Length: 219
Length: 277
Picture (spheres, each protein chain N blue to C red):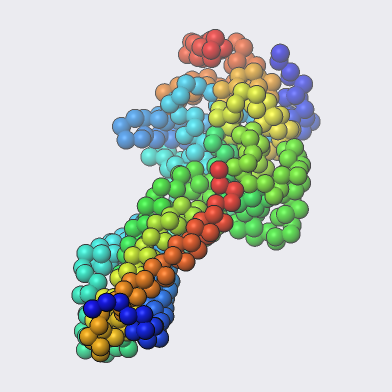
C-alpha cells in the first residue's frame, strides 16, 4: 500500500471541515480559558476567606482530573440535572474550563512575581483596587506571562481530539471517519497531523508578533 | 554652610503670628511596629506641623523608612495611633458589608499624601505622561485633558518637558526619579514623603533630583518628610532633623543644631561615620 495523491486530494474537503472545527473549538476555548483563568487567579489571591479557597479547590480539581472525564461528565451527567448543550458547546466549555485551570496557575505566578513596588506605587496614588488591577497589574502580568499563555493555547489545541469522544467532528475524527470509509488510514491521518501543524504555526507566529508589540518600552 | 535665610523664606508666614502653631500634619502616638521578631518602631511619638520640612536620619534599620511607610498606609502599626491632618488613619474600622467603616474618610485624607520611592517604581508599561496622569484621572476623577495639561506643567517644572512620550526604561535614573516626583505632585499633595530618593542613583545624577526637591520645598504649606543620607543637603534645605536609633527618635531639633552641634552621643557617632564615608 503506497501513498495515493488522488485519494489524499479527495480527503481534503472533510479534513478542512474538521480543521475549521478544531480551530473554532480552540479559539473559543482559549478565550474562555484566558478570561476564566485570570478570574480564578484573582480570586485565589484575593485572600477573601471562602472565596479564595473555593477558587483554589476548583482549579486543583480541574487540573487533577483527566479532560476526558470532565468532557463525559458535562456531556452525559449534566443533562440529568437539567443542563444540556450540543457536543460543540459542551466541548468548547469543557476545553475552556480545563485550560482555565492551567492559565490560572500561569497568571498567579505572574501576579506574585510582579515587583512589590508596583503595588505600592499604585496604592500611594490611591488608585481604587479595580484600577490597580486593570491599569497597573494586569497589563504587566499579561506581558510577562504571554509566552506561557500561548504555550497553554497550543496544548489546548492538541487536546481537542478528546472531544471526538462526544462526537465533535474535529480534525482527528474527520481523519478517522475518512479512513473507516475506505480502509485507507495513511493519507487522512498524515494530513490530519499536518493540519494540526498548519494551525499551530500561525498561532505561534502571531504570539511572537504580539510579544514584540507588547515589549515596547520594556528595558 | 548654614543658610538660615532659606528657613526664613519657608517660614515667612509665621513671622507675623509667631505664637500660633500651624496645624498638625502628622502625629504618631506611642506607635510600635515589629517585623517578625525585630522591633522597628518602639513606642514612638512625634508630631510634624503643616509646612515643616523634616529630614529623618539614622542608621539603617532604625525605623525611619517604616515611619514614612506607615504614614503612606503601606505598613500597619502593631500598636499606637497615627493621625494625618488631624484625621486618625490608624487604627481604623475597615468597611464590612454590614457597615461603612472609616475607610472613606481615611481615603479622602490619604489622597493628600504623596510618596516617592528609592527605586522610583514608575509603571514601566506606561509612557511618562500616562504615569503622571494615572493618579489624577483614576483616583481624583480629573478629566483627561486637565490631567494632561497639569502633567505637562509638572514635567516642565522638573526639567523634563519634551519627555512626555518617552518610556520610563529609556530614561536615566535621575530622570525617572524626577518623573516619579512629578507623578507624586500631580496628586496635589499637602504632604510629600521622600524615601531615600537619591540612594539608588549614580552620584552624578543626585544633584538634579535634589535641585527639584529644593524647588518644591519652597512651597510654604507643603509638608515634607524625607529619609535621607544627604547630610549637606539636609543641612541646607530642611527645618528640622529627627535622628532615629533602634525605633526611637533620639534627637529632634532644627537642622543646623542637630547636624552641626548634636547633643546626643548616638547622633555624634552616626554623623561622624557618615561624613567619614
